[in-house]
Length: 262
Image 1 (cartoon, one colour):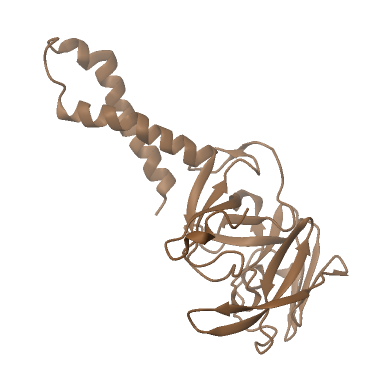
Image 2 (spheres, rainbow, N blue to C red):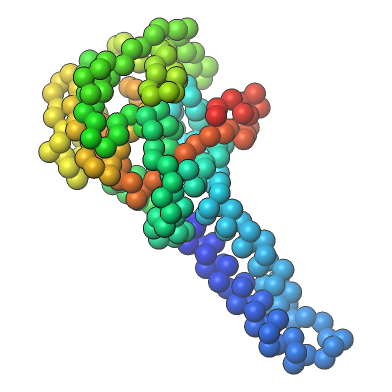
């Protein structure tokens, strides 16, 4: 469902009702006449819908985390806020960038439209920037020839399954974050789909090596062995970016999650 398009159409519909009444229909009614129902509802909803549309399109947008691919950073059921203007101001609905601002940096957690099916929104961490050579083999990440150090910390407990997973601290750019790596899982255990610039990636049983093309990004989940990401479906083009995640504003199962990610 294209919620931005639905909001835009509602803005047009209610705005048209408001304009017709304000500039024409109101003058035709007797001064003591009640507003027709279509004016009462359309006119009153217009400023509210317009405010929501502008806020969601240009400032912040809420999302709910549907999967465990970003555990332990983000958990299933987290409600997050995404900054819509960090990576440039874009026209709503068509997502056309009109003002250049910042570019994604390694370590950013980003919401984007899933390249194989752009009706879906995904959230992952930026690992590779345009021009980077990203290698993930035997569960070790290397960027431009430099191995990213994984510092072991306390195991992560999945309270639903009562299952412990090794947890590590990793630093990408200026961002220190935690990842999960399952020692028992095979190094490469997912189906690969055809994707643009697929010739820039090379696979074997140990993992993958990719050169990130211009205008694209290489994304990975923090739950490394349970994430469908750029290792399997390719690069994310700049035009697919939605925004940068920066805040957890609610979680029905755990109120302590509020504000725990920034």
